[in-house]
Length: 639
Image: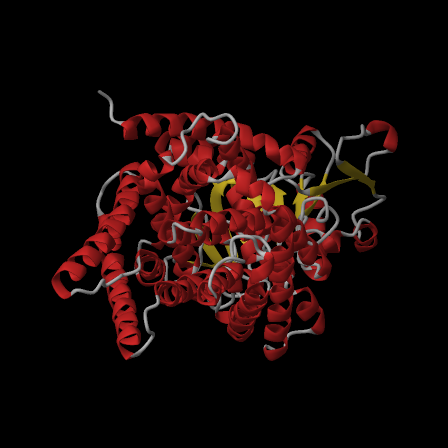
C-alpha cells in the first residue's frame, strides 16, 4: 500500500505545477506571481476545491525546512560587502532606523491593539507581548528578490537605489538574527519561563553555536562547489545540505534535552545565512553559488508558497482582512518613521528622507518563512498568526512594487528603454557614404539600439529613405558641414568613401571633434600608415576577408560568437563612467554568470586582463554574453 506521504506529495506536485502555469496569468492584471501562487494554493486547498486534505501539509513539513534553509542561503548570497562600500554610512543609519524604530514602534502599537485582534483578545498579556514582538520583527523583513526584480525592470541606478538595495539585503540578514532572539523571548513568555541569567546564558550559547556552525557550513559549501560536478547535482546537494541543517537542529535539541535536561536550540536560519555570507564574500565560488541560487530559486519559492497556500485557513483569512489592512497601515507608518529618522541621521538629502520608506513596503519569502516557524511552534494560535501575516504580505505585494517604482522615478534613477531613446544611454554613429554596405551597416546598428545617421553628398533624388536612419545631406567634407550634422556628439564615425575623402573626415575629427572611435574602409593599402597616425581603426576588405576565413577555420565557435551569429549573444564595448566602479577589481564585481570579459583597454593600451585588474574611469571593457545580461553589465559600469 502506498504511504499517505507519497500520495500527498503527488497531489502537492500536481497542484504546484498548475499553480506555476496559472500564476503567470496574474501578472497580466498587475499582481505579483507570488500572490498568484498563494491564491491558487488556497483555492486548491481543503476549504475551497478540497484537492488537498486538511492537515496533510504536516506530512510535507520537510518541504518547508528545505525552502526556509534556501531562503536563508539566498538572503546571505545577496549581502556582498564590496558593493556596499560607497554608501556604508547611509546604509548603516537607515538600516538602524528601519530595524530599531520600525520594530519598537510596530511592537508597541500591535500590543495596544491586541483587544481589537480576534485571536489575541482572549490571550494573556504576556502571550500578547510575545505575539507583538514576533510580529514586530516580521514587519521589518523585506524582500530582496522583489527589490532586485524591480531594479532590473526599471534599469535603476544611483545612490537612492544602491542605498535601498543595501538596506534591504542587510536588514533581512539582521532580521533573521533578531527573530532568533525574539523567538526565544516569546517562548519564555508563553511558557512562563523566567528570563534570568540561565536563560540569557543559554541564548548566548545557542547563538554562538549557530554562528560557529554557520562558519563550518560555509567551508563545507565551498568544498561542495569545488567538486567537478554538474550544476544540477550541486543544486540538489545545496538543497540536501539545507535540509540536513534542520535535521541537525532537531537532533541537537533532542539529545541535549535527554543528556542535560535542557533543549539547546541552534537556529538553522542563522547557520544557513552565515554559511551563504561566507561563500559570497570569502571564497572563490561566489559566482557559481549565486548562479545556482538564482536557478533553483523559482522552483523552491513555487513549492514554498504553494504549500503555504494549501495550509492556509481560508475561513480565518476571510475574517481578518479588516485588521490586516489596519496592521498593514501600522507597518507602513513605522517604516515611514524608521526610514526618515535613519535618513536624517545619515545626513541624506531631505528628498531622499521623504521618499526613503517607499522601497521597503514589499514583503515575501523571509517574512512568510518566519511566520511559518511561529505557526509550527504555537499550535493554539499559530495558524491565526500565520493567516494574518499572509494577508498583510498579500497587501504589501500589491502596493509595494508600484511604490518602489514611483520612488525610483521621483529621484530620476530609472533608465527604462522608453526614457533612454534620446538620452546619454543611446550610442550615436555617423556613416559617411551612401551605398549598399552603409545601408546594411546602418540597419544592423539600429537593430542593436544605436542612433544612426548617414552623411552623403548625393542629391535627395538619388537617396532612398531608410527606416530608423537619418539621412544628412552635406555640401562638402568640411568642418562646418560636420558641425551641421553634429559629428561632435557621435560615439563612432564610419567612413566608406574614397581614401582621399576618408582622410579628410579623419583629419577633421582628429583635430576638431575628438571622436574616440573612427572606422575607415581602406581602398589602397599604400595609405594605411597615414590613417593609423590619426588613430583610425582600419578595415581593408581583401585582408579582412582572408583573416575572417582564417579565424572561422581555427576558432569557428569564438568567431561566430564575436560576429553575433549565435542566437541571443552579442559583444559590446562599455566605457567605465561610473565613479563607484573606479578602483574596483574585476573579481569583486558581480556580473551575470553568462558574461565573459574579453579585454580592458586603457587609453591606447590593452591590459592583460585577470581577476585582480582594477578598473579606472574611462577604461573600455569588451564584454560578450546574452543580450539581456549585457544590458545589466552596461548599466552597472556606466552612468
